[in-house]
Image 1 (spheres, rainbow, N blue to C red):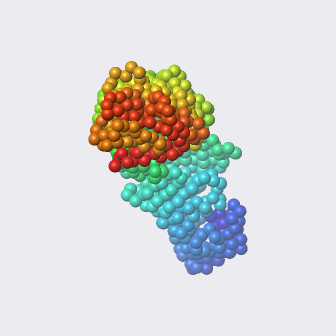
Image 2 (cartoon, rainbow, N blue to C red):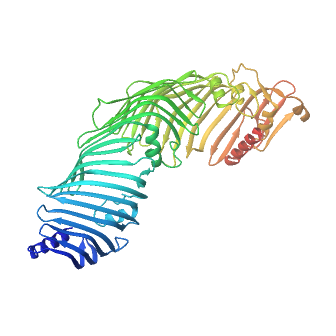
Image 3 (cartoon, rainbow, N blue to C red):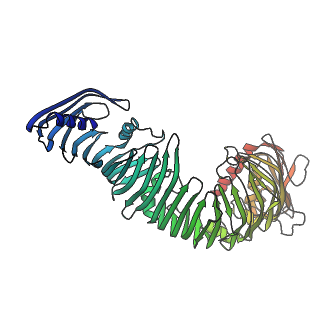
Length: 611
């Protein structure tokens, strides 16, 4: 453009006393270097140049440029220049670039420039590669897809090398991918109104307004430093109330991984958001209005979610508060009305009031919770709560398993997380199967790594065996079961070592009966058990047998399970010690078995039982 103006000025000085029509203009430059890019064999030609003391006009011209930046070397153009008003008009038609076409119209007067660009079917990856040859952009900045755009800009050159730009960019049709954002603009055009000023070391965006009818209304203003190090002085983003379904369908869903559990959602309701960013304080706010969320695979859902989520970089005066009427997980586990009140400050989250979530006829209560240094190596936190009694009959109905009696409940003492390790302070108690399970000295290390490690001691008190075996196809056993798992050590959730033993408690008041099916499965468990009975045919006649005592133990070391029972025999140990006639004993003779082989037998029994 500067070359054209210099030429016109030179032509004006040397021909100011004359007027010409139908002149044939030729202007050549052998080579031109712009930002280390070479443009060769440049030719400007106008076959019908008109010149008067008032006007220089070329209605039919072309520019020839040899460069790999453009697809075709010949560019059609026209221009006119009013000598008194110094008004310049300049048009380029169908500039072939980035596998598309660009039409450019420029009008300039008194340092005010009006520019209109019509961009058709441009390939954005190719365009970005061209832009990067002139402007340093972040290495991870990418664009892809094709697009049709209309750009109208008003640019004013001011004192101090300040440029003021106002205008409208309209994305009419196409696809744009700017990692991780994907836009498919086929239904509604996307409009961007801009008002900014640019100085050598500063960029001020006074207003940037993005609108897409019935989908998006976003306003931004920002102030950036463009010195050696890019910095945000101030940034404000406001999303006006928007239907969350349309925002999700057009923008959010495309940013999610295909296997994400949030990739297929049914949504209703509205959302509003705001971000204020300054060098010393930052605040983000999201308001939700009667949001309904449901996974299309029915894995989870929540109804009438409303409230606000807000985060602040340093102030404690910003609380998040959410309410919902009901929810579900795993399609059939129903959650009742609840609310959550918490604070999100910098990289910390803290529960501001006890969280109480009804579930079936009971509830989960979190009395205290906080988590610090979220996302950092030194992340740490604490939790304390309890499970209010939940009927096992409700759980069994929801999970479509045989009906269970009793309830599940328990206390969660202080749970501490630090250095990728969880430690339970005190004892973790759970009421289940009419009995109690207590875990203590529980710790989990490397929780977020590929190889987590768990250590614990577990005590079992008087579980109801009938309730327990009714949820499996193993076979019914009546009586109670107590026992322990000491020095349990898991690596990557696989047992490395433990000492375990389970048996009827000595004060068991429930009658002892065992089904034929359970006996057969027990006799096949270790691969070397024997069933002692007066007659093997009796085992097939009777469905159930009385027994005196039942139990099994395993001491796991180096992949070998050293087994025991509830009493010794001459060559083995009792798994089931018979009671009334017809007397039945299940005796184990193999005291050591490979742990993996034992697991395979258990799986085989389970698979056989299921059929």
